[in-house]
Image 1 (cartoon, helix red, strand yellow):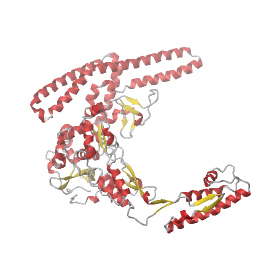
Image 2 (cartoon, rainbow, N blue to C red):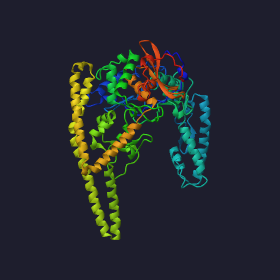
Image 3 (cartoon, rainbow, N blue to C red):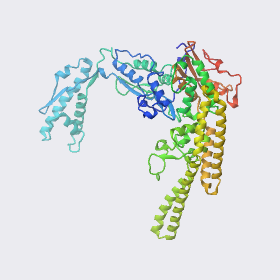
Length: 626
C-alpha cells in the first residue's frame, strides 16, 4: 500500500458479519438452478475472490503454520441465497505446536503388587530440566504406592493388581477407612501426572510456530480488505477474548477467531446485490472482475450514482444502533419475523406477518427467541418486501399476522379451563354458556381464515402483473433494449393501472361489514409497518460495508474501512467511517467519505455543489481525525 498518511495510528473498526456458509456446498445444487446467477457467481467466487488471490506467506519450514494458512484460505466466506448476499469471515481455527510435544509413556511399572521405575522410558527424556521435573514425582509415586500396597496387605484389604484400579478406587471413598482416602487421592494424582507426562522439546525452534508467525499470516490474509480493521482493533485489545489471534488454553497454542457484533439484517438483499453487480459488470452471468479492478474510482462513482438513483430512501443515521446491518437501511426486514431490532427478541409490537413455529404445537406460546419461528414468506417474497414494503403488503394481505385469531385461541383455552372448573362445582348453565362461546370463537377464526383465502385469490392476477412489471423494468434498464423503451413504458403504465384497480377491489372488500375484524388487523399491520419504515435506518458503518463488500466481491480487492471523527453539519465532531481503496489505474490509494456523499442527496441537506469525483483524496482532508 502506498499511503501518504499513517494508517497504523487510526482507530480500527469492528466489522460486522453474522452468517456463515462454506464455499463448496454452494455447488451442491439441483441442476434446475445450475444457471442461476447465485450458482454461477459461486463457481467464479471459489477460484477468484479478494482473499484467496493473495500470495501465501507461511514459512514452509513450519508445517503447522502452512496448514493453518491453508485452512484460513479455505475458510468459510460466502453465504449467497435467493434472499441475501453476505460476505463475511466466521471461522475459528486452532493452531498449535503439538508436533514438538513429546508424550512419555510407561514411566513406571506395576507388577506383582509392586511399583518400580521404567528406566528405559525415563532415559528417553533428553531434556534435563524436564527429567528433573518428573523424576521427583515418579520417586514419590513409587514410595507412596508401595507403602499403601503393604498397608492394604497388613489390613487384609483388597490388593489391586493394576494402577488403573487404584485410581478408580481412590475416587470412590464410601467403603474406605477414614485414614485411607487422602493418601489414596494423593497416589491417584501422582499416577495421573506421571502417566500423562509430556513436554515440548524446544531445543530446535526451526519448526516452532510463534504467535507472531500466526499474526503475520492473518495480517497478510486480511490486509487491504473490509475485514482488516477488526484485526487491527484486536491487536490493541487487552482482553484475550477480543483478539482475532488469541492465546489458547493449551500451551504453545493459539486460536484464530473472527468474533464480530451480531447485527439484524447484516447482508445485502440478493436482488439488490445483483442489480449492483449488473451496474458494475454489465452482467449477472459473466463476471469480469477486471472491469472493477482496473477502474476503481469509476466503479465507485457508478455504484454511488446507481444507489442514489435507485434507492433514494436508503436511510443512514450516525445515532442508529450498532446492531443494525446493511439490509435494515433498505426496509425494516426484522418485521418479517416480528423481531425487536433493539433487543433481537420476538415482539408483537413489530409483528406484521404470520410466522411458523419450529414447535408445531400451535397451542404453545411463542418464546422471545427469533430462532423458534420461521417466516411464512419465501426467499423471493422476503426480497420483494425489502424492496417495496408497502406495496408488498398491499399485494399480500393474506400473509399478515391476525392477532384476532390469537385472541380467539386464547379465549378458547380460557373457556376450556373454566368449563372444567364449573363442571366440578356443578354450574351447568355456565358450562353451557362457555361451550357456546367456544363454538363462536372457532367460527370467527374459520371466517377469518376463509377471508384470508378470498383476499389471496383476488390478488393472484395482480401479483402476476406485478412480476411482469418487474420484468419489463429490468428490460427498460437494459441498454440493448433501448429501441423498445417507449413500448415497455406504455406496458408498465397499463399494468400498473390494472394493479391499482385490483388493489382497490380488495380495499372495497375489506370495507364490507363481515370483513371488519380482518380490516382492523390489516390496518394494525400497516400501522406497525409504517412506524418501522419511519424508524428504519442503519448506521454509518453498515453504509460503508454496503459499498466495501459489494466492490470487494466484484473485483476491487484492495478496499478497507477506517474509523475516525468528523464534523458534518456543525462544529461537533462525531464518530464516523470512511473508505480507503487502491486505484490500479493511477497506482494510488484514496480515501472517500461515503457518508458525506450520501448526505449530499438527502432532502434535508442537499449539497448541490457536491461532486463525488472531486472527493477522492490522496491524503486525509482537513477536519478529519483518525
